[in-house]
Image (cartoon, rainbow, N blue to C red; front, side, top):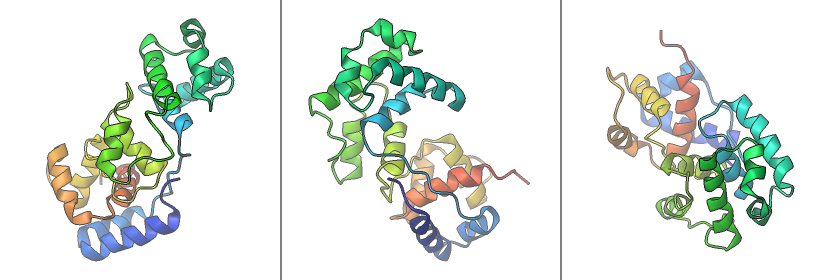
Length: 205
């Protein structure tokens, strides 16, 4: 599970105590709601199903995939389904390949989502072995499903834009610059990322 409301408040208060710009942003936007997902195969599969479509569409497709697969929590159940069944549930050929990649890695034990390495970079390296799971998806999974406290998805455009607003910069920082700026936010970059998404919704005044 992800960071709790208590953890978010504690970590964001610590960041605000370090940096008055962060404190001002927190005073404006207030504390974010926790973002929590279940650890494991189903959450990553749902991530693949929902890629590049709206939340409403993803929810509809997911229900069809659940019905087509049967025991959605068992990767072997998906492996056993024909491509035609999965296409009928609304998955593209590409997403079927991604879903099978995940299911096969989990079924054979090459990817054990209950025992990912404690080192964040090592965990990300394992997750991106799944076709269709890039660094951003891996980082979001580790943050929302495992509650890792120092995950920083600096490649996310909304995170970059929030960093610009929080720091008072004229231009949105690059991924590299966003990583450099957040170095001083260790070991609470996970809370900073959740706050950045929350802060991004604040209208520009």
